[in-house]
Length: 101
Image (cartoon, rainbow, N blue to C red; front, side, top):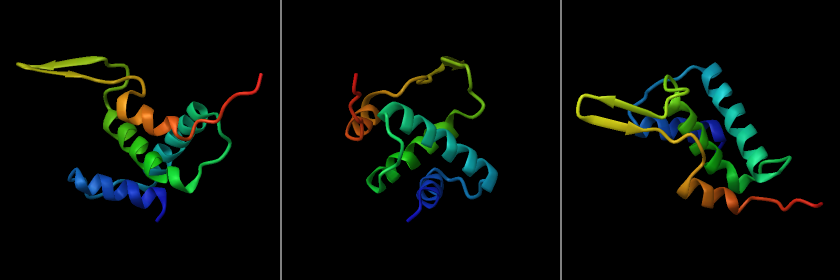
């Protein structure tokens, strides 16, 4: 299954029925770039495809909130993550290649 198809399944689970192909491609390129930079890789192993799809979903959920760190709406406060944290960081660590100095 392609990364883009996995992403569409994750979107459907959130109740989103359609997203343009251009947006999907843009989100894929951003997630791919992040993955390659964070893991110091030049390729994406097949085992990492679900992680890339999840990273695409994170980018999708941040649309419209670029530059925000926290938002308050009435009595509800939202804190937005600006860096890779927790669960995602541990998943990415498994694919990290060491650096040679």
